Length: 65
Image 1 (cartoon, one colour):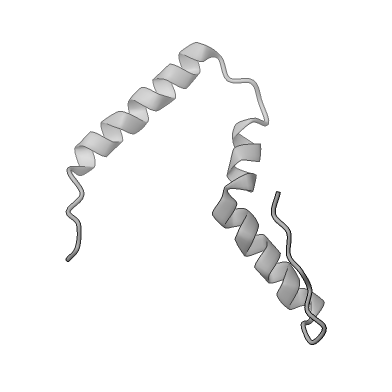
Image 2: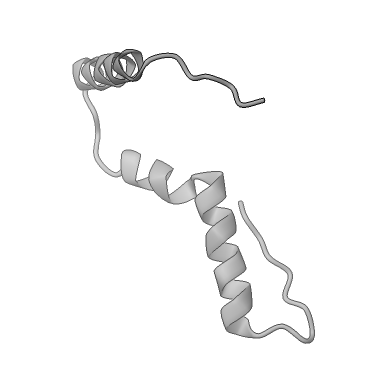
């Protein structure tokens, strides 16, 4: 669970912005959306196969030096 400690000189809006950024980085909302509805095993396999195919189509990632 993400938590943010509010400093004395910090506004609530700034702390809320930091909290939202932490939640986004942790992937909490995307995980929540993914588990909102039950997904059949066949649908899960199909989704993973499509994601793998997209990854292959994009080609290998070239690391920057």
